[in-house]
Image 1 (cartoon, rainbow, N blue to C red):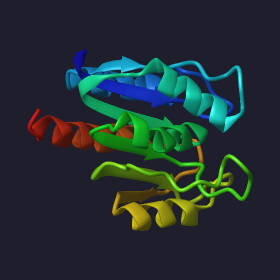
Image 2: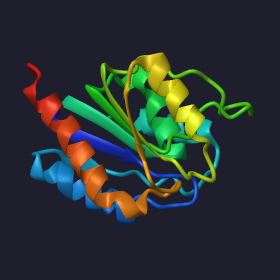
Image 3: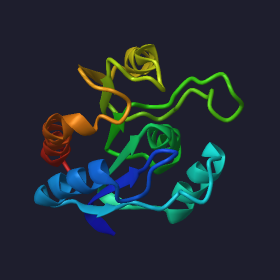
Image 4: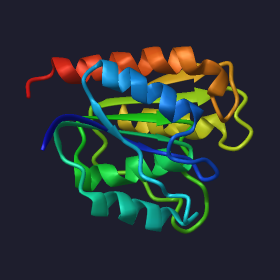
Length: 171
């Protein structure tokens, strides 16, 4: 079992090592976290992606889950089983009124940071606000769109801050 592990979940249309994840992986590695980013591109079914993540059984003394868009939904829904120390969600695709997309995540860790763009054209900002209110999570609203790719520096700072808080916790 690794001491520190960050598991990324990519969005519906992206891949496991896109611009955002590759950038943030370097942030995590600088903080001493191993990083994995499974490839979910074979399916757009959120239940299948959640099952794939759970089947990996990622384990670490300090496990952190992170996801973007649909990947944020997958990461949030895996919390009850995987029990991460922290959760980092970017433009989380939560609370869509479709079967498989409408469940309330459970087991959300106390260290939870949500980042959303004010101009998100895919997931309304109110969904991030609802999640943050429901789970007492940090909420960072940025002058950006759904991809948040123009905010890599800020995402880097926010993830770094969260990982530092994880590292400051007792093992």
